[in-house]
Length: 365
Image (tube, rainbow, N blue to C red; front, side):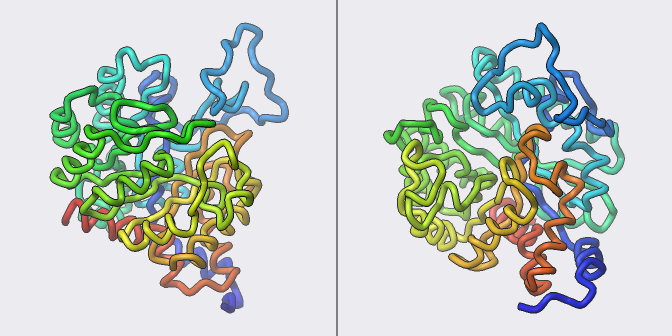
């Protein structure tokens, strides 16, 4: 691979014509909480200078970057101005219910659905995408397409008819669990190596296939991953994970071993590729943009460039890579891929064409 002479200029031109899809953001949480609106261009304090308020409550979970992540979350990292500056064509917006809201999971999730519909009404450059054609049209018109995705089926409760209702409201992707165990499957919980899909979980995947809703295996444990690929008749996505951490060539190569079951990493990536699926590489926790591109290249080297994309999952500046502090910095990935000599067609696949292929196959249009 040989980089173009003027890699920066070539990358900028390539990025401007690319369909760019990011497969995971929690932007709907602060919007539903009333902290920001999609059109706000918020500048949050520098982590090095910020001090938490004296009466600030403790973190909600160990996955929250304490204390700054608890205070700001995704604020300042996502939003319509960030999407437009970053050249995004489509942003997948998660509908996630945290532990303290599980008692009212359906209401909380519907609140986020309502807010995204409201944001689409209030912003002429934001559209709700329910077909692949919607994403292509957004690119042509200089708009950003928003895709709604359930991150965990807790809002569905014990009644799969609720999946049908969420589909009618515009939800086009669903992961069955976050990190906690639920009625449908086990998530990627620390220190727990049991479970997989329950019988209702298998029924849920079959219903998602019937509805033409994309199945997201991003938070499945290893056993659940295999179960999902066995049950699903359609390509799946793994919306946001670190491939080297969760799918290592050897378990001991992973910083998560032995807390997580990270065995058979190569085999699982190969199974995802055979399914026609796509792996969304996340940014959270990486040191700099080069680390993210290393993860992208790891998937390319093992299963080819047709099965990797972007799944940022930024949550607080303290956990963001240098050079990828917010989603507007996505062109840095394009430039790094170009500098490393990847052909244009590979870069375009990574930026969004791979996810768009799955969306087109599953949703139609």
